[in-house]
Image 1 (cartoon, rainbow, N blue to C red):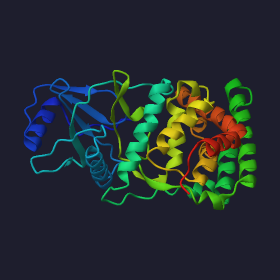
Image 2 (cartoon, rainbow, N blue to C red):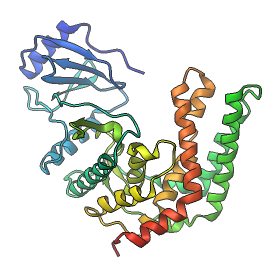
Image 3 (cartoon, one colour):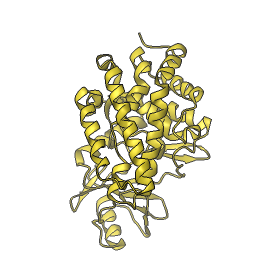
Image 4 (cartoon, rainbow, N blue to C red):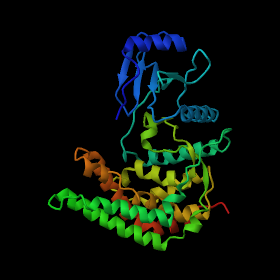
Length: 344
């Protein structure tokens, strides 16, 4: 949900930009995209973004540090404009504001990527993770180990089971949701019994984007023109973002199944920049499976508000991914282990 803007009108924006950035603005247009308040200035010469209150200034300053670091490696990221005080962001009426140069291009929807665009996604991710190894600041640790702890599996089963009691047995969609939830609970039980959690602690943890996927790309002429939104940058097992980003971009993965040949090429491309270890290859599919198994996102939102039909579709899709990974995780691991050079 978009928060109310701090600006009363376009004239206030023009005055604010002049006083704080020294820029002469003659035209302001609201851009209706995403959950932030975003404005085009001077016919798309600049973009003003008003961050949501959930993001602290510390997080935004960290994003700016990451972006400026990546620019040194010729990675296509936004270019922020400094205020008259020499800062890349500003606080106005308790909201953090940034102004950046406009990035020409367009976005794709999930699972619209061709083979070439899919591989380009992996290539960019490798370049980003490689560049962030020399980042001069410390990123927060997104500890995913709780996802694959025995305690979390128990909590996850309860979280899913709690939804069953409020489903309407006479409703066709609710019956399908119930079937999916019961199937997910059984998968959670089996995974919790058959996974070596101690080995999973050896996954490669590095600085990363934090939310790397197709929705963060701006395309021009079919190729990535910029990667945006680094506000979630953190340290985490990099194979999670690797497999997650693949599942969002490849057109062949639209129904929740993978094109395994393409996925192997995807991991190979990333591996040119960051050598993965044997645990990364063994558990990449299991880590993603565990994460989406433990989530009831989509179903919960629909059950409490039947207007959330798009989120329900997302819930169904993720259950399809769960089914595919549950039945094919060991096959994926073996393909990767046999075809990819590892870091010993």
